[in-house]
Length: 150
Image 1 (tube, rainbow, N blue to C red):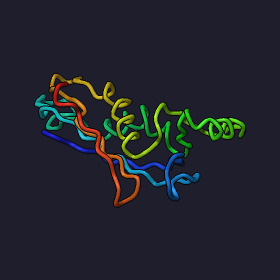
Image 2 (cartoon, rainbow, N blue to C red):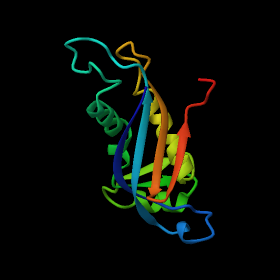
Image 3 (cartoon, rainbow, N blue to C red):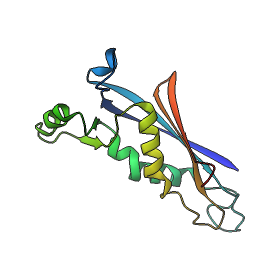
Image 4 (cartoon, rainbow, N blue to C red):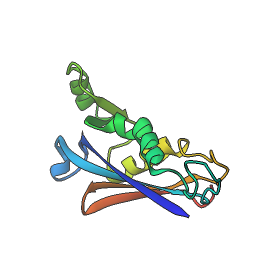
């Protein structure tokens, strides 16, 4: 069984080598969809009976491990040193320095890596993260999907 929870957050970024508008500082209303697989829990009297995982728990883990960290932050590439230095000079500015250029593709992959260990088989129902879909705009998104070798 697959289940998906969607959350939204706001963040800024720039793509330093981009040949068009995305090389400038700008922001997006991102949406992230987290897809989990697992067996339906069959434990009478358990709050999660009949579910793969309670959607509120999916949300809580996503917020704790990723969304609250990225929401209203500037997602900066460590190699974009002038921007990182500038952002670090702003008192109290929320900056997240990443090891990759913050494209939709890289952000989806980073999100998958951050969330993968958060969703584990806690009910004996083979729960695991299968996919993270990150919308940069309503019409543009990237999917980070579990490698079939995992």
